[in-house]
Image 1 (spheres, rainbow over the protein chains, first blue to last red):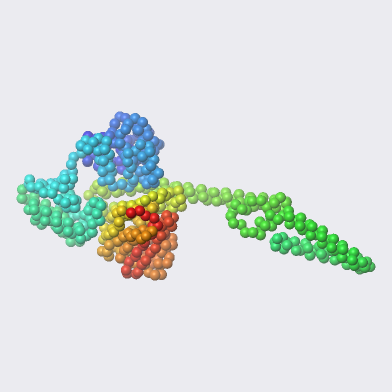
Image 2 (image 1 turned 135 degrees about the vertical axis):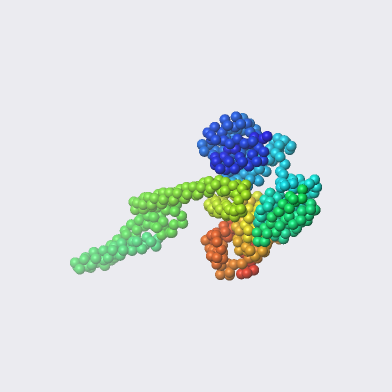
Length: 233
Length: 328
């Protein structure tokens, strides 16, 4: 269980970070008293610190130096300042990486994971592999594998991305925009035709598992995955 | 010299009239020696010329200063000589200069304070924006997509304000280095991801992955961002693509951003790079500040890139950035 200390003075933001980190299986400690960040650090002894730059009393750079004087743990800065000077300062004062606000959760999570891997070894991260499932149909997005009643098959990256979101939203409709956005994260700028092609491929893939008409097109709004495989267990 | 003569012309006249009046009085009194009379006039004129020469010599710098236009504010306080009049003028000018300087300093200070406050405020606004975004990303709110789109727009607005403020201090805020054009554009496209998708316009990237240009990544990114926003805005719903094409000729590299949107009317094309100029399209589309292309051109000029625009109404618009040094 990795411990992550959250040093962010906006209560809502630190709350969101806390919830999400815990969802991913990390232990979190939230700093309450910004006059005694170092004491909190010593008592909590985290593996990684999320440090905001603009804090009451002293700024994040100051606390970063303080922490560095007693520990070599990972420090990840969160800041609204996007000036290069600030990023340079953050790294100068002993920060390991830098995320600018407003950030995406995925980015912060990815950076935390990579920092922890870097310092505690590839397999030391004890976070669970992500699993998306609904009544027996199981998707392992990181392995690109789909499983139903013991049958397994491998998906392409794009199919997996589409299925992951459709499956987690079952049986709600997912709009084409949202699907496109998810596909875009993969560094390829996908247009509508490519989306159509991939939806068709995904239909075929589901048919291999005997799921007919599970992937439903809803005119004018998007697609939904109907759990038609439920009744045939 | 001219000013000096004009200034002393009445004195010369007065002097001559005075001499003649004195002679006339002697003449009327019965004195009839013409040569002596002329000699006394000559003496009088010599004395006058002597005085005028002395006067000119001592006040020369003052007259020069008075008759040549000032190039800078600083020139006004540099010496006008040691004669009482020159000194008095200098004191006056220095006092005036002092007051002006004080007012300038005050204006500058309040402007800097204002900029600093604005910068700080924009940065502070980023935290609430982060909170909204994260809340929307984690929840299953059906309105999330729409709210995220709005936060994107807010973020863009903030970014523009920050860059506009930085433009003033550009000289201290840029670093020219080889920038990989394709990577930079991919980044810009990602920042505008939602805008692309919602507008149903898709990017088409034909930029040589090995091409790097000498530029500042941050400013160039912002500049291309402005062009991308325009391209998307004016070709929304057309189901067309926005094309990014790079080309290299002997000594220059080009980047073309092309859209097949509504284009720009000829009447607007000439003034498109002026600040606050929105033109016909801007009045029909929301959120045109008329500043995008102005910023783009300002930044291009400062980085030493060329920028030109071609457009036909109904055909679309092409913006070409020219880089005069590149590596492949």
